Length: 531
Image 1 (cartoon, rainbow, N blue to C red):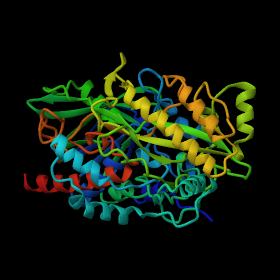
Image 2: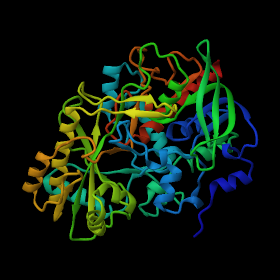
Image 3: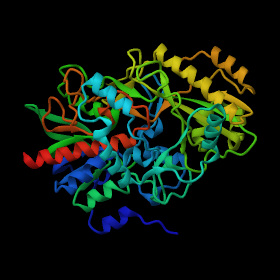
């Protein structure tokens, strides 16, 4: 069965695109609205605004890759589709941060989990950060709209064995669990969602909002790095971009100037603050790049007698929020429990050790299960608080110092994951830490976890969710933007991405970004029509 290449078909119909790596000379472009970033926030906004009759230019740093390019090979996919070749790290190098960098952004390579923003999170934002108009009731219609648009529904097939271990363990212990909603249509259940969907089943921006934008007369510029805004009298005059080489490694010497009536920044929680920092954007209250949060993740592996084959089947289909709100909204660190898919290269990195030790662990991969704890950060005064900075070359980096509060949550999560894994029938459990090895019973696991030195570089840590850095608030002293995403100091700039969130949200953020940005883009269209 052949899979249509939506872009090849669209380009044959006259879609307008520009490849920054192929420019023979410098380029100047004009639009009603220029959108920087083609992921969940940028592409959703582009579809709505182009449908409203505005000329939209969508700008992406990464390459254009489509269904025929997705070969499900880790070395190729990580190099082509991820920020910094999947090597994006926190400033100290202790935390791996997985983000997309290609047309479609992170929606191209995420694992399809789609949750509404928890009501408790929205209420906390309203009460603590002066966010207005985004309570659960106000957001419900937007969630419903985007769920219908993107095929979001609880996964209807049985979970793969990797996810089912989480279900079995929770059931045995009386912990609550639920089925994850996924944004897929006609999914082939391959399990390699993080490498790009070769069958167009994942309803990413690549196969939904970006084609809709181009069909409506919008334009796409890719392999173009947004370098800086030029500013004058509280407005953006122009956006200056650099053409990139075909591998998106280095600028190719071509410059692109973009002039627009309005600009939308949708580069995500690291790149959006980074662009504003490079542009010396006004920041009178020192909010830019501050209060940037991760869903910090730690991991626990387990060996089973039966085959798990954690590289096949829907990568995430079961979750547990049993411990997510167990000490209230702003109590001790809490977490969501999920599982990751374990393709071989990713698994080799997670399972750790070197040489024969790593080879032995990888030999057991077909019978290995891994669970992760997704930490809900930013709700407590002792939370880690990240800051986006610029390196000497102008590239952005996230400084994310951990606190005793964070480490306490990580240790408790190790305990709960081990408990669930043994309850699911695991024969041995391994907290993913440099000083840990497999243990074959729960008391030994508890003793091991209690004595682990929870320190940077020894504890395996990662995240795929960056939130904040351009937080929204009606009070300019608390945020970079207002609740409609309007920059407090630059009148023709809006921000439409996860950098708007005042804290982490406590759930995989893609649906939250879709719904919020759909709401903001619709409001922007009304304002621009009336201006």
